[in-house]
Image 1 (tube, rainbow, N blue to C red):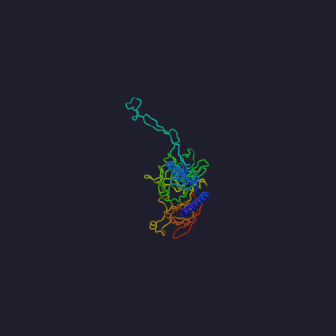
Image 2: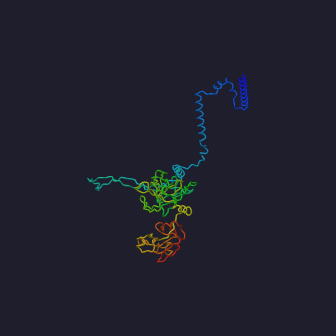
Image 3: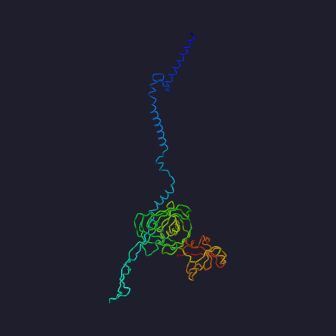
Length: 438
């Protein structure tokens, strides 16, 4: 009996402790006292627990929501995308260069007054028939051609590009070589303007013409001395004189080439230090620009190899810089002139003529008697240069196959004083010469 009393007391104490504990927990809000009511268990289960299909739907909805939140988080802000300075692809660079440069590339139309020939028929008796009833009084109709005045006709075309805001245009000399022809510039927007030839380069295949238009956007000139083999080249021109602003893209295939160029009915011309490219250059492209990926002019398209594919040539743009400056300043192109005929000395010439040096320019006469070694009245004649003298240096630059005398002189200006190191009759001496206009 005592054991039962003790058990009841122990259970009562434990129950009291549990009740106190539950009351404290309820006040602390960390345990829901409603769970003490067993009648609410089933009701709670019905209200709170979702059905199986609804549970799956909730799971999918939650997954979809998570993915959407993730996409929103990972998607870059539009303003950030616009601010991103991503590098342009090769294609995008070409498109940009063409878009920026095309408005400054023009077609040059050549027109000329040509005779209008009409065909007429004349009756002729080859047997000399008479009016006395000769049996040989036959008549044949023979065509005759007579001129009936003249008519202006288009006879050719080429390309050029704008180099100043006030209408200066650079092209090839052979495009505007006919002094009796008229030239019209066709702009990229379809407008036409009469053009005047301001200057033709006496040495290089370059010329500058002008149209009376202002506020034009000229092309930017690059530096042809920095061209690298394999770099992208873009040619723009009036292909075949018919398809204006034709675009072709290639690479720089060669540098400092020497070629002999000639056109139909034109004399041949030696061109040195030209650029070779595989960008397609066709008749009519002459005078058009060769561009780099920045849209800067690095060359002037001048010739294409006959009987070959993808071999075209351009004059380095640096050759034209002085022409442009002179025309802007003086309205003409002039070249300095020394006035000697010479041969570049190599080992073979040295041995043949028993010369003391293996470099320099040996002053010699030409094959004809009139081809004097020193031109009378020239700067060389005034400075006392004579036949068989050897010009070794010009202003400290040695003359050899890589640095010819004419090339060095062409890089000078009219009126410049130069110092020549000369071997004259067994002695070395320095001679001062003032260059004059050719």
